[in-house]
Length: 447
Image (cartoon, rainbow, N blue to C red; front, side, top):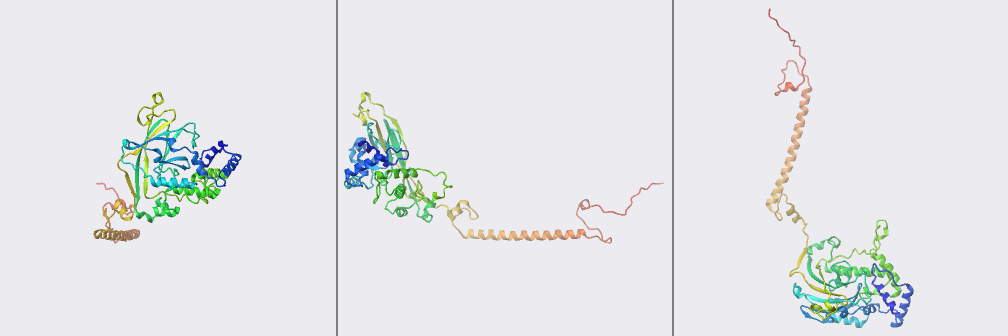
């Protein structure tokens, strides 16, 4: 019957995971858990957490700034949508079903001070040794053998819903150096005049109103949007997604509905222009248009340097961080440190107002900032000159047209014989057609 507990990993709702448990197995396991806990609301969250390995079994050795540390003082096991993870520098409150576990998690957060990186040198880095037992059953999204590391803000839910920062896979028998480069970004208050959909971000107070909570991030918004969609379709939330208060968690009987929802959430509508109903339900599938990034915050760029660990001669390492450790089980070394001693900072501001555009593209006022008396005189001179030139050219065209018409009328009249021929300009006779005359030419011969 204990083999049926392995089917509880269906609650993680991996998008490419095949349904392993049928309704018969789910019914038997549901009856067993109801009998054990004497309630219909048995704590799936706590069961999944207990089935996961302890942090001391995965992280077997650690060094912080050159000093060996106790792993239990820095890591705490928590449930996430990717499985049971060991949290480091995590400050989010616990939402465990069991009150005792929840109080212990919160006390660990309050008492343990977060580690602050003091230098950007690899010699002052934070180093940990990871070890895996191949004989253990491991919940996995993909069929690969590696350690999974997720970097995220310390107040966010431990999941990468928007690929915001980093998701790292570490191969067995490898040394991975992870230099982290923070990038701070800020926004000027003047961009508040634009809608959030135009500036594509929320200020802290705007994000709090969207979620109706004291903390906002795009991953937090996606988590709430995903939970609301799940509640709408199944009436409950999958236990690994329990990161908010006052939620109804699903039991084993709701797994078929969760599978149907999972297909809809991870499915793309390739022909949305044919289906008119695709825009009605914004929470269906991956559509959460109201979830936007924050206008103020920090991003982390992660650079990886990976090397291979040599297998120990005789099976036991003799020096270094792996001293007296065996290579019979897969190992990996993780080193965390800042890449540089400084961090970049950017600010989003309005640069397209009329003053900036006027100075950028020039004009009659050149590249001056603002107006002046000379600029106003230039504008008046430019406007009156253009107006005078327009009317002057129009008047000249009228005079010229009238002169042409008068000349044509005169040319069409018959000239009287007693009037002398008109005086024409040079070559006029060559241009005018020949006129008939009464002059006869003859030849005179001398006698």
